Image (cartoon, rainbow, N blue to C red; front, side, top):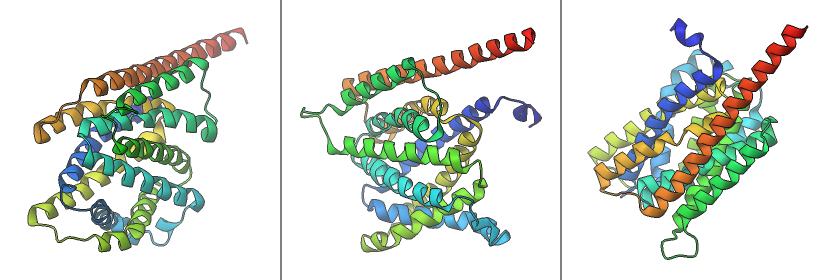
Length: 303
């Protein structure tokens, strides 16, 4: 793995994010299948219990150091943002075609850019701001407000996107001070504790096949979270968020194969605008870094 360690940090982040995109698309499919009968709070409760069990060896091996965070306030903020992202985003996934919910969730990329400027002091130029605005136009096309095709669950997906963007920004901050294991422990325990009461209230006894799916959700979520944490540990938040559109390909494939659902024209048009805006942001970021490197080399040569 020495070749991997020699890669630039942004490329490491991109590699982890590509893997996370495929894994999270699979997780959304599993949740949609379970949500046909089980309540979302029950699904989340079992998911978090499973993730807590998986991180338990790390907790016990390094206890109490494993629970020691340098920034506990940010950990609590991350739990809140994760609750918004999961409750809203997964509710949309259950009640909407998988590709539609995923496409609207792409607004996360543009929320991240806005949040990165505010909270991480990342520099964003006028062209990338323009791409953000155009991206939100694409989201509006997919939402179709004021028409018969408008669904309240589209707004759920948008709210989930904002919550997920908040999580990503907080991951970027927390990964500089806390270990990946500590971040995952707080996420698993925090969301799980909040889900106990509603999860028990809406509990329905799962069938044998549903238990298998629930366990799979926990395992896939754990792996995806690990990939996501390392992605944002290495890469810049505003750049990585622009690459997550790959998940739409997986969501479209899963939705078609399992539910025979295919995105409509408005979804494709809006998603195309969002993806184009995201690709433009990647281009601007690459060009900015190249120009900065050339300028820095020029200064070194003069000196």
